[in-house]
Image (cartoon, rainbow, N blue to C red; front, side, top):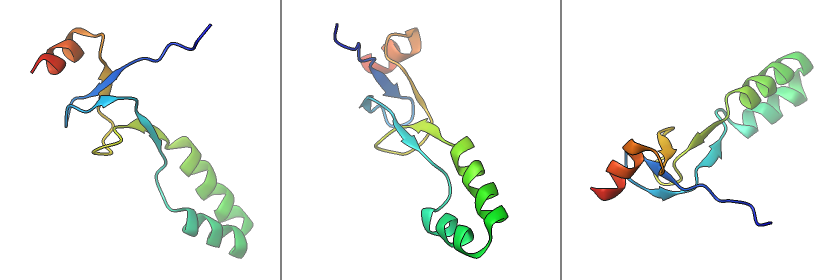
Length: 78
């Protein structure tokens, strides 16, 4: 059976599509901390992994809602 793709809409920019995963922080800082010190690198990596969120691919704001909700339908009809 094919995987069902859920449609989403951004409440900020009205983009319709799938959200993307965004990770806070910088990979270069994380890499530098790992090379310099083990413990700060580990703490920073754990923080980055725990701060991931779904965001709009167009405006990068965490404001995506399912299109099938009443608010999603209202935004799509505007």
